[in-house]
Image (tube, rainbow, N blue to C red; front, side):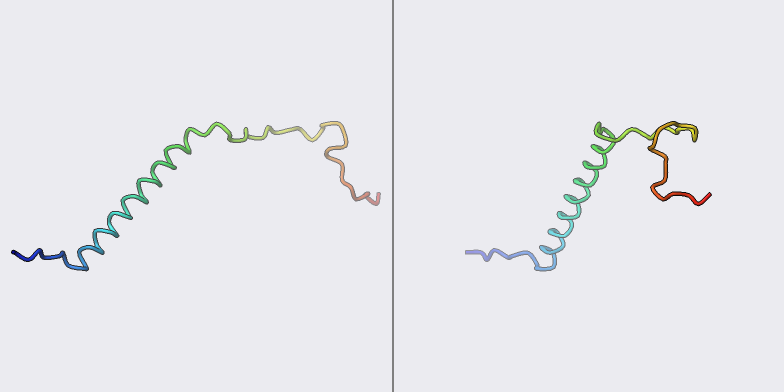
Length: 65
């Protein structure tokens, strides 16, 4: 019977590393693609004037005027 020659160890390791790199980069591209279609992003804050009434802008530390 003819001997079945096994592939070199370095060739097997190279194939595994290249395969893992392809899988990781494909997963990264998939997540990057999905990030553009995210609907749960917070809306940008609106700018408010300094004359807004209420206690929301009052400082808890009393001023010494």
